[in-house]
Amino acid sequence: MARQLLKTTDVWLTENEEEAMSMVEDAKEKQTEGGYMLTKGSYTAKPKKSKGEILYIEYKVTIEKTFD
Image 1 (cartoon, rainbow, N blue to C red):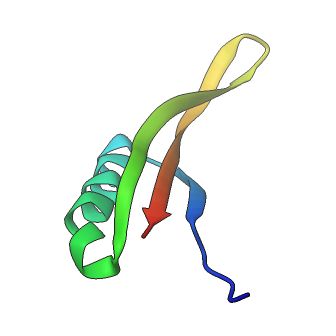
Image 2: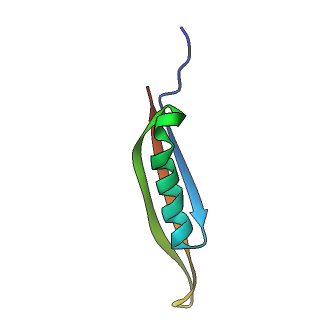
Image 3: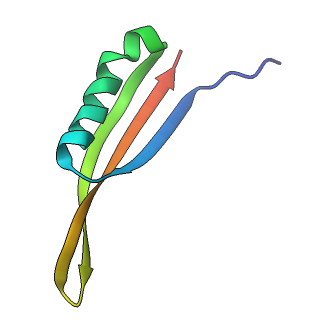
């Protein structure tokens, strides 16, 4: 029996919201030429704190692709 990739989930960390949005939009635009369907494309803010004070915010980007 041949092996076939069915689904992948990529999780990335970025430094700013614009880059996170760009990654999701790129995945949407490239799905037809990439041979996959984007089943999930999202990002969430992850603040890094020290002693209750926010030091910086990074963004966790999740892109899930399903292949036919």
